[in-house]
Amino acid sequence: MKLHEYQAKELFAKYAIPIQKGVVIDRPEQVDGLALKYPLVLKAQVLVGGRGKAGGIKLAATAGEARRHAATILGMEIKGEKVRRLLVAEAAELGAEYYVAFTVDRAARRMAVITSAAGGIDIEEVARTTPDQIVRGTADPFLGVQSYHTRQLGRRTGLTGSLLSDYVGITTALYRLCVAEDAELAEINPLAVVAGRLLAVDAKVIIDDNAVYRHPSLPKNEELTELEAAARAEGLSYVELEGDLAIIGNGAGLVMSTLDMVAYFGGRPAENMKQAIEIVVRKPGVRGLFINIFGGITRCDDIARGIVDARPPVGMVVRLTGTNEEEGRRILQAAGIHAYIDPEEAAQRAVALASQQ
Image (cartoon, rainbow, N blue to C red):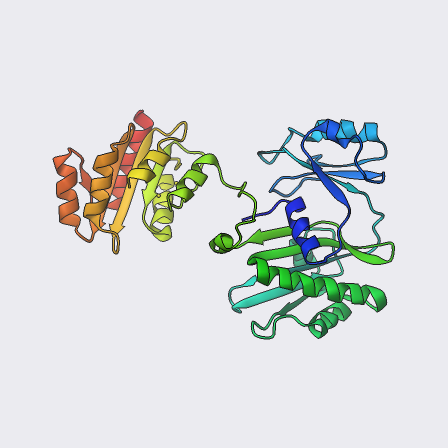
Protein backbone atom coordinates (compact mmCIF):
# COMPACT_ATOMS: atom_id res chain seq x y z
CA MET A 1 0.00 0.00 0.00
CA LYS A 2 1.61 3.23 -1.19
CA LEU A 3 1.16 6.38 0.84
CA HIS A 4 1.00 9.88 -0.60
CA GLU A 5 3.90 12.15 0.28
CA TYR A 6 1.85 14.11 2.82
CA GLN A 7 0.74 10.87 4.50
CA ALA A 8 4.33 9.60 4.62
CA LYS A 9 5.43 12.90 6.14
CA GLU A 10 2.75 12.61 8.80
CA LEU A 11 4.39 9.32 9.77
CA PHE A 12 7.81 10.99 9.68
CA ALA A 13 6.59 13.64 12.12
CA LYS A 14 5.29 10.89 14.41
CA TYR A 15 8.83 9.51 14.61
CA ALA A 16 10.47 12.95 15.01
CA ILE A 17 12.00 13.00 11.53
CA PRO A 18 12.29 16.71 10.57
CA ILE A 19 10.06 17.84 7.69
CA GLN A 20 8.98 21.15 6.14
CA LYS A 21 5.93 22.90 7.51
CA GLY A 22 3.07 22.27 5.10
CA VAL A 23 -0.68 22.00 4.54
CA VAL A 24 -2.77 19.79 2.23
CA ILE A 25 -5.41 21.52 0.08
CA ASP A 26 -7.89 20.39 -2.58
CA ARG A 27 -9.14 23.78 -3.85
CA PRO A 28 -7.08 26.74 -5.15
CA GLU A 29 -8.81 29.27 -2.89
CA GLN A 30 -7.56 27.40 0.18
CA VAL A 31 -4.13 28.92 -0.51
CA ASP A 32 -5.38 32.23 0.91
CA GLY A 33 -4.67 32.70 4.59
CA LEU A 34 -2.33 29.75 5.05
CA ALA A 35 -0.03 30.19 8.04
CA LEU A 36 3.04 29.55 5.89
CA LYS A 37 5.97 31.75 4.91
CA TYR A 38 6.61 32.50 1.25
CA PRO A 39 8.09 31.29 -1.03
CA LEU A 40 5.99 28.12 -1.13
CA VAL A 41 6.32 24.88 -3.04
CA LEU A 42 3.14 23.24 -4.37
CA LYS A 43 3.42 19.49 -4.94
CA ALA A 44 0.84 17.26 -6.63
CA GLN A 45 -0.14 14.31 -4.44
CA VAL A 46 -0.21 11.30 -6.74
CA LEU A 47 1.04 7.74 -6.34
CA VAL A 48 3.32 7.87 -9.39
CA GLY A 49 6.74 9.29 -10.07
CA GLY A 50 7.75 12.05 -12.44
CA ARG A 51 5.66 14.82 -10.85
CA GLY A 52 8.24 17.51 -11.46
CA LYS A 53 8.74 16.74 -15.15
CA ALA A 54 4.96 16.65 -15.64
CA GLY A 55 4.51 20.11 -14.13
CA GLY A 56 3.14 18.84 -10.84
CA ILE A 57 5.64 20.72 -8.65
CA LYS A 58 5.77 24.54 -8.71
CA LEU A 59 7.34 27.33 -6.68
CA ALA A 60 5.31 30.40 -5.74
CA ALA A 61 6.65 33.70 -4.41
CA THR A 62 3.23 35.30 -3.77
CA ALA A 63 -0.32 34.27 -2.86
CA GLY A 64 -1.55 35.14 -6.36
CA GLU A 65 1.12 32.97 -7.97
CA ALA A 66 0.30 30.15 -5.55
CA ARG A 67 -3.42 30.31 -6.48
CA ARG A 68 -2.59 30.19 -10.20
CA HIS A 69 -0.29 27.21 -9.76
CA ALA A 70 -2.86 25.43 -7.59
CA ALA A 71 -5.56 25.96 -10.22
CA THR A 72 -3.24 24.58 -12.90
CA ILE A 73 -2.07 21.50 -11.00
CA LEU A 74 -5.34 20.44 -9.39
CA GLY A 75 -7.26 18.32 -11.87
CA MET A 76 -4.32 17.62 -14.17
CA GLU A 77 -3.40 14.01 -14.96
CA ILE A 78 0.06 12.63 -14.27
CA LYS A 79 0.67 9.20 -15.80
CA GLY A 80 -3.05 8.52 -15.80
CA GLU A 81 -3.64 9.61 -12.19
CA LYS A 82 -5.76 12.70 -11.55
CA VAL A 83 -4.39 15.24 -9.07
CA ARG A 84 -6.97 15.78 -6.31
CA ARG A 85 -4.73 17.21 -3.57
CA LEU A 86 -1.74 19.48 -3.22
CA LEU A 87 0.85 19.60 -0.50
CA VAL A 88 1.69 23.28 0.03
CA ALA A 89 4.90 23.66 2.02
CA GLU A 90 7.44 26.31 2.86
CA ALA A 91 10.17 26.23 0.24
CA ALA A 92 13.70 25.62 1.46
CA GLU A 93 17.12 26.60 0.14
CA LEU A 94 18.74 23.21 -0.35
CA GLY A 95 22.42 22.54 0.13
CA ALA A 96 23.96 19.08 -0.24
CA GLU A 97 21.42 16.34 -0.90
CA TYR A 98 21.60 12.78 0.43
CA TYR A 99 19.58 9.59 0.06
CA VAL A 100 18.56 7.08 2.70
CA ALA A 101 16.05 4.24 2.61
CA PHE A 102 15.14 0.99 4.31
CA THR A 103 13.60 -1.79 2.25
CA VAL A 104 12.95 -5.52 2.51
CA ASP A 105 15.85 -7.66 1.30
CA ARG A 106 14.15 -11.01 0.69
CA ALA A 107 17.39 -12.81 -0.14
CA ALA A 108 18.99 -11.71 3.15
CA ARG A 109 15.69 -12.15 5.06
CA ARG A 110 16.06 -8.81 6.78
CA MET A 111 15.73 -5.07 6.24
CA ALA A 112 18.38 -3.49 4.05
CA VAL A 113 19.55 0.09 4.32
CA ILE A 114 20.68 2.00 1.23
CA THR A 115 22.26 5.41 1.52
CA SER A 116 24.21 7.76 -0.72
CA ALA A 117 25.71 11.23 -0.95
CA ALA A 118 24.08 11.48 -4.42
CA GLY A 119 20.56 12.32 -3.31
CA GLY A 120 17.84 14.23 -5.09
CA ILE A 121 18.04 12.13 -8.25
CA ASP A 122 16.95 8.66 -9.37
CA ILE A 123 18.81 6.24 -7.09
CA GLU A 124 18.54 3.45 -9.68
CA GLU A 125 20.45 5.65 -12.13
CA VAL A 126 23.10 6.34 -9.48
CA ALA A 127 23.47 2.61 -8.82
CA ARG A 128 23.80 1.96 -12.55
CA THR A 129 26.26 4.72 -13.46
CA THR A 130 28.25 5.34 -10.25
CA PRO A 131 27.72 2.32 -7.98
CA ASP A 132 30.65 3.39 -5.77
CA GLN A 133 28.41 6.19 -4.45
CA ILE A 134 25.95 3.68 -2.97
CA VAL A 135 26.46 2.49 0.61
CA ARG A 136 24.54 -0.63 1.65
CA GLY A 137 23.97 -2.55 4.85
CA THR A 138 21.47 -4.87 6.52
CA ALA A 139 19.73 -4.74 9.87
CA ASP A 140 20.07 -7.65 12.27
CA PRO A 141 16.46 -8.68 13.07
CA PHE A 142 17.35 -9.19 16.75
CA LEU A 143 19.57 -6.16 17.35
CA GLY A 144 17.73 -3.84 14.99
CA VAL A 145 19.49 -0.65 13.92
CA GLN A 146 21.44 1.07 16.67
CA SER A 147 23.02 4.51 16.69
CA TYR A 148 26.50 3.13 16.14
CA HIS A 149 25.29 1.36 13.00
CA THR A 150 23.90 4.55 11.49
CA ARG A 151 26.97 6.51 12.57
CA GLN A 152 29.12 4.13 10.54
CA LEU A 153 26.80 4.54 7.53
CA GLY A 154 26.88 8.32 7.85
CA ARG A 155 30.67 8.42 7.96
CA ARG A 156 30.87 6.20 4.87
CA THR A 157 28.51 8.68 3.17
CA GLY A 158 30.90 11.53 4.03
CA LEU A 159 28.99 13.18 6.87
CA THR A 160 30.71 14.71 9.89
CA GLY A 161 29.92 16.89 12.90
CA SER A 162 26.35 18.04 13.53
CA LEU A 163 25.16 16.72 10.16
CA LEU A 164 26.37 13.27 11.15
CA SER A 165 24.45 13.56 14.44
CA ASP A 166 21.32 14.56 12.51
CA TYR A 167 21.81 11.63 10.14
CA VAL A 168 22.13 9.18 13.02
CA GLY A 169 18.87 10.35 14.61
CA ILE A 170 16.92 10.43 11.33
CA THR A 171 18.14 7.07 10.03
CA THR A 172 17.57 5.31 13.34
CA ALA A 173 14.05 6.77 13.50
CA LEU A 174 13.38 5.70 9.91
CA TYR A 175 14.18 2.09 10.86
CA ARG A 176 11.85 2.28 13.88
CA LEU A 177 9.11 3.53 11.56
CA CYS A 178 9.66 0.57 9.20
CA VAL A 179 9.35 -1.98 11.98
CA ALA A 180 6.44 -0.39 13.85
CA GLU A 181 4.40 0.46 10.73
CA ASP A 182 5.19 -2.74 8.77
CA ALA A 183 6.74 -0.78 5.91
CA GLU A 184 8.21 -2.56 2.89
CA LEU A 185 9.97 0.68 1.96
CA ALA A 186 10.67 3.95 3.74
CA GLU A 187 12.67 6.41 1.67
CA ILE A 188 13.93 9.98 2.00
CA ASN A 189 15.12 11.51 -1.27
CA PRO A 190 16.45 14.04 -0.82
CA LEU A 191 17.58 14.26 2.77
CA ALA A 192 18.92 17.76 2.29
CA VAL A 193 21.03 20.24 4.19
CA VAL A 194 18.84 23.26 5.00
CA ALA A 195 20.22 26.05 7.21
CA GLY A 196 22.92 23.74 8.52
CA ARG A 197 20.59 20.88 9.48
CA LEU A 198 19.27 17.80 7.69
CA LEU A 199 15.65 17.92 6.52
CA ALA A 200 13.45 15.26 4.88
CA VAL A 201 12.36 17.21 1.79
CA ASP A 202 10.52 14.29 0.20
CA ALA A 203 9.06 11.09 1.63
CA LYS A 204 8.01 7.73 0.28
CA VAL A 205 6.47 4.91 2.35
CA ILE A 206 4.97 1.61 1.20
CA ILE A 207 3.13 -0.47 3.80
CA ASP A 208 3.02 -4.28 3.52
CA ASP A 209 -0.50 -5.14 2.28
CA ASN A 210 -0.55 -8.23 4.49
CA ALA A 211 -0.10 -6.07 7.60
CA VAL A 212 -2.63 -3.33 6.84
CA TYR A 213 -5.17 -4.96 9.20
CA ARG A 214 -2.82 -4.14 12.09
CA HIS A 215 -3.06 -0.43 11.33
CA PRO A 216 -6.73 0.65 11.38
CA SER A 217 -5.73 4.32 11.32
CA LEU A 218 -4.17 4.02 7.87
CA PRO A 219 -5.98 5.95 5.13
CA LYS A 220 -8.00 4.30 2.38
CA ASN A 221 -5.81 2.58 -0.21
CA GLU A 222 -6.05 4.87 -3.24
CA GLU A 223 -4.04 2.55 -5.49
CA LEU A 224 -7.06 0.28 -5.96
CA THR A 225 -9.70 0.85 -8.61
CA GLU A 226 -13.36 0.52 -7.61
CA LEU A 227 -13.50 -3.06 -8.91
CA GLU A 228 -10.18 -4.00 -7.27
CA ALA A 229 -11.48 -2.67 -3.94
CA ALA A 230 -14.73 -4.65 -4.38
CA ALA A 231 -12.74 -7.81 -5.06
CA ARG A 232 -10.53 -7.30 -2.01
CA ALA A 233 -13.64 -6.89 0.16
CA GLU A 234 -14.69 -10.37 -1.02
CA GLY A 235 -11.24 -11.81 -0.25
CA LEU A 236 -10.29 -12.04 -3.95
CA SER A 237 -7.18 -10.89 -5.76
CA TYR A 238 -8.05 -8.85 -8.84
CA VAL A 239 -5.96 -6.68 -11.15
CA GLU A 240 -7.81 -4.45 -13.58
CA LEU A 241 -6.17 -4.39 -17.01
CA GLU A 242 -7.11 -2.66 -20.26
CA GLY A 243 -8.23 -5.66 -22.33
CA ASP A 244 -11.62 -7.04 -23.33
CA LEU A 245 -11.24 -10.62 -22.01
CA ALA A 246 -11.75 -11.21 -18.29
CA ILE A 247 -9.71 -14.03 -16.73
CA ILE A 248 -10.38 -15.98 -13.54
CA GLY A 249 -7.85 -18.51 -12.24
CA ASN A 250 -6.67 -20.06 -9.01
CA GLY A 251 -3.09 -19.36 -8.02
CA ALA A 252 -0.78 -16.61 -9.26
CA GLY A 253 1.30 -18.95 -11.44
CA LEU A 254 -1.70 -20.34 -13.30
CA VAL A 255 -3.21 -16.88 -13.77
CA MET A 256 0.07 -15.51 -15.15
CA SER A 257 0.48 -18.43 -17.57
CA THR A 258 -3.15 -17.95 -18.66
CA LEU A 259 -2.44 -14.28 -19.38
CA ASP A 260 0.57 -15.32 -21.44
CA MET A 261 -1.43 -17.87 -23.47
CA VAL A 262 -4.22 -15.40 -24.17
CA ALA A 263 -1.71 -12.78 -25.31
CA TYR A 264 0.09 -15.36 -27.49
CA PHE A 265 -3.13 -16.14 -29.35
CA GLY A 266 -3.86 -12.45 -29.90
CA GLY A 267 -6.20 -11.68 -27.00
CA ARG A 268 -6.15 -8.77 -24.56
CA PRO A 269 -6.74 -9.92 -20.94
CA ALA A 270 -8.85 -7.81 -18.57
CA GLU A 271 -7.55 -10.30 -14.55
CA ASN A 272 -10.23 -14.14 -9.53
CA MET A 273 -16.68 -18.14 -8.19
CA LYS A 274 -19.96 -16.43 -8.03
CA GLN A 275 -18.54 -13.12 -6.63
CA ALA A 276 -15.48 -13.27 -8.92
CA ILE A 277 -17.60 -13.57 -12.04
CA GLU A 278 -19.92 -10.78 -10.94
CA ILE A 279 -16.95 -8.48 -10.35
CA VAL A 280 -14.94 -9.14 -13.53
CA VAL A 281 -17.88 -8.75 -15.91
CA ARG A 282 -18.69 -5.32 -14.42
CA LYS A 283 -15.64 -3.85 -16.13
CA PRO A 284 -16.75 -1.79 -19.16
CA GLY A 285 -15.60 -3.27 -22.46
CA VAL A 286 -15.31 -6.89 -21.29
CA ARG A 287 -16.64 -9.09 -24.11
CA GLY A 288 -15.62 -12.54 -22.93
CA LEU A 289 -14.66 -14.55 -19.84
CA PHE A 290 -11.99 -17.27 -19.59
CA ILE A 291 -12.10 -19.40 -16.41
CA ASN A 292 -8.97 -21.56 -16.05
CA ILE A 293 -9.02 -23.79 -12.96
CA PHE A 294 -6.58 -26.47 -11.81
CA GLY A 295 -8.17 -28.04 -8.75
CA GLY A 296 -5.67 -28.89 -6.03
CA ILE A 297 -7.01 -27.68 -2.71
CA THR A 298 -9.71 -26.00 -4.78
CA ARG A 299 -12.47 -28.49 -5.65
CA CYS A 300 -13.74 -28.51 -9.22
CA ASP A 301 -17.32 -29.33 -8.17
CA ASP A 302 -17.43 -26.22 -5.93
CA ILE A 303 -16.10 -24.12 -8.81
CA ALA A 304 -18.67 -25.59 -11.18
CA ARG A 305 -21.56 -24.73 -8.83
CA GLY A 306 -20.34 -21.15 -8.59
CA ILE A 307 -20.14 -20.87 -12.38
CA VAL A 308 -23.66 -22.23 -12.81
CA ASP A 309 -25.03 -19.88 -10.14
CA ALA A 310 -23.43 -16.80 -11.72
CA ARG A 311 -24.05 -17.44 -15.46
CA PRO A 312 -22.26 -14.31 -16.78
CA PRO A 313 -23.88 -12.05 -19.39
CA VAL A 314 -20.88 -12.46 -21.74
CA GLY A 315 -19.52 -15.46 -23.64
CA MET A 316 -17.60 -17.84 -21.39
CA VAL A 317 -14.93 -20.52 -21.86
CA VAL A 318 -14.09 -22.92 -18.99
CA ARG A 319 -11.04 -25.14 -18.55
CA LEU A 320 -11.43 -27.42 -15.52
CA THR A 321 -9.09 -30.14 -14.27
CA GLY A 322 -8.04 -31.53 -10.88
CA THR A 323 -9.80 -32.51 -7.65
CA ASN A 324 -13.38 -33.73 -8.19
CA GLU A 325 -12.98 -32.96 -11.87
CA GLU A 326 -15.58 -35.51 -13.07
CA GLU A 327 -18.26 -34.18 -10.72
CA GLY A 328 -17.45 -30.61 -11.77
CA ARG A 329 -17.79 -31.52 -15.45
CA ARG A 330 -21.11 -33.27 -14.76
CA ILE A 331 -22.49 -30.15 -13.06
CA LEU A 332 -21.38 -27.92 -15.94
CA GLN A 333 -22.63 -30.32 -18.61
CA ALA A 334 -26.07 -30.47 -16.94
CA ALA A 335 -26.17 -26.67 -17.26
CA GLY A 336 -25.14 -26.78 -20.92
CA ILE A 337 -21.58 -25.59 -20.32
CA HIS A 338 -18.64 -27.37 -21.96
CA ALA A 339 -15.40 -27.67 -19.95
CA TYR A 340 -12.09 -27.95 -21.80
CA ILE A 341 -9.11 -29.98 -20.61
CA ASP A 342 -6.33 -28.52 -22.76
CA PRO A 343 -5.43 -24.96 -21.66
CA GLU A 344 -4.14 -23.84 -25.07
CA GLU A 345 -7.28 -25.02 -26.83
CA ALA A 346 -9.37 -23.20 -24.24
CA ALA A 347 -7.29 -20.00 -24.57
CA GLN A 348 -7.68 -20.01 -28.35
CA ARG A 349 -11.43 -20.49 -28.02
CA ALA A 350 -11.69 -17.66 -25.45
CA VAL A 351 -9.82 -15.20 -27.69
CA ALA A 352 -11.97 -16.15 -30.68
CA LEU A 353 -15.15 -15.79 -28.60
CA ALA A 354 -14.20 -12.29 -27.39
CA SER A 355 -13.36 -11.15 -30.94
CA GLN A 356 -16.79 -12.26 -32.17
CA GLN A 357 -18.76 -10.20 -29.64
